[in-house]
Image (cartoon, rainbow, N blue to C red; front, side):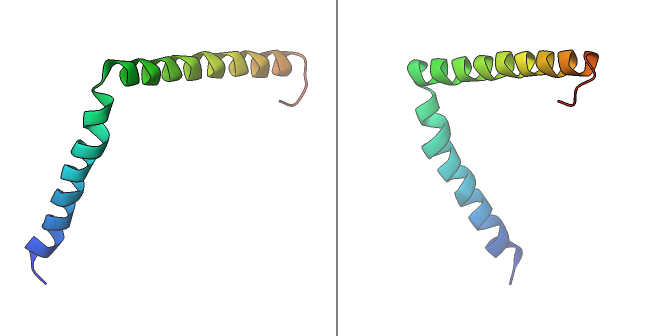
Length: 62
């Protein structure tokens, strides 16, 4: 076994990732949906954190 047998599959995987994952994300609609989803996730986590802070202030277990 030589080093080329290890590096070649890694290179093919990276190439596959760019072709099948990153290029489709390049479309503006898909990018917008991904960004909207990430913003919604951040907002939801902040709301949940507010509930945890309120529960701790009231002495309840969150």
